[in-house]
Image (cartoon, rainbow, N blue to C red; front, top):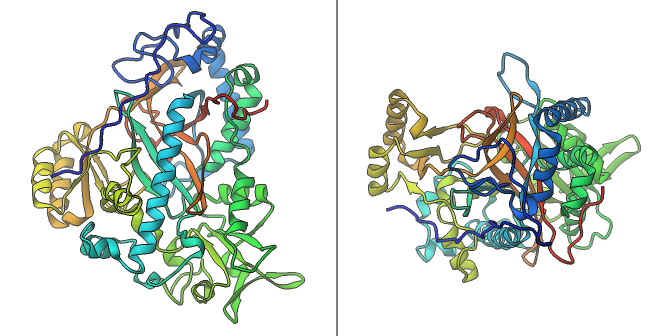
Amino acid sequence: MSFQSQSSAPISQSATVDAMGNPLPALSGYDSGNFFDELVSSDNVARVDASMLVHLINQMGVAELGRRQTAIERALYRMGITFTVYGDNQGTEKIMPFDVVPRIVSANLWQRIDAGLQQRIRALNRFLDDIYNERNIIRDGVIPADLIDSATAYLPQCKGLKPPNGVWCHITGTDLVRDNSGNVFVLEDNLRCPSGVSYVLQNRHVMKRNFPEVFGASRVRPVADYPARLYSMLKAVAPSGITDPMVALLTPGVFNSAYYEHSFLAQQMGIELVEGRDLTVENEKVYMRTTAGLQQVHVIYRRVDDTFIDPEVFNPDSLLGVAGLMKAYQAGNVTLANAPGTGVADDKVIYAFVPNMIKYYLGEEMILPNVSTYLCSRDEDREYVLNHLDELVVKAAAESGGYGILIGPHASEKERGEFADNIRKNPRNWIAQPTLQLSRVPTIVDGQMEGRHVDLRPYILCSSPDDVWVLPGGLTRVALRKGSLVVNSSQGGGSKDTWVAADDGQPTAST
């Protein structure tokens, strides 16, 4: 039996006139097809918050939009906004393709998203603290112990850890999708080292410069304060008694795919960007090597994977981490954000139980539902999945970045057969979900405007159970290949700016 999502009635955004009673414009020359579109209704009329943007697009024309997009992409490349694709014969350093038509989210819809993400993070932090300590959720029969203990990212070395304020996950990127009815679903959680927020900030920067009039008129909520909020959150989780903490960002180095983001965020926050070789541990305290001698570090925003952060505890061959770091952490002399061990909640099998976690820890019903999920470790679910591979999306439990995925309706018989064999060999490693018709946004492709499927990754900061903040926007990722549902940059996807419409009394971004 599958874990079914709860119903979530979509918020209607269809209208024929704006707030002043003026007719809403139709988007000229665009075919929304049979998909839910974020900018226009089924009859091609602009949604209320997109009216100014659609009017501008009609005035400007696709050719001029294409020229501006080319100029923006050149600017992004000159700014060094690239990512690394390992094993690509055409070169590893690439710019994430940028599309000039933004995605717009209404204030009403964002209110629900904000509340749902806050709820989810509170429950996930409670879950992580529980499974590495008392394990009450297992004892009470809510989640089977074997599913947790067999998760690739479950780290027995983290048993007994007690992070400050009970917060394991300080920075989260949660992936959301909308279906053909406009319902919002959580697709997956990213609790280890979520990336992509630098694209959010830089996309906004270039859009404001290139479309100042429509940006100002659309009353868009700001995202530029994210680095300041991130820095404040990191200082707030410093060890007890530290009033002026030293904060550093730990990066694997220049060859990491997200190194640009590491250096960008460190620069924006005004903190040190360090590699493992820059740090040392003495007397269970972490120090940074400087020209003036050793300086103690109190908070580390780590962008190094869990098993590489301390060769004494995890991977003994790691050259990326710091020997003794876990001892300093356990002694309470340094805070790691995120805490090691959070990856167990990224496991796609564990994801299926988040509605149960919310009910168990918070006593609440889920605000943002999961996508219905079949667990191949269950006999009944596995039989259904094997008999319906041509209808389902199959995912490996511990993979990310668009890898380890079968999109059944688009796969060949050979591909489906290979996945069926893998499921039979290791059922615990696989889940399946229905193939959602993801929402679309108008996108410039080869000089034409066509609909392309999108998802959304908002970023959430948490310093305590009562202090959870959601960035009003996030990374809209777009599948640039016609008909594709895979939005990951490593699989040819691109990005768009995300405009969240401000409600009355909320601040708007300046131009």
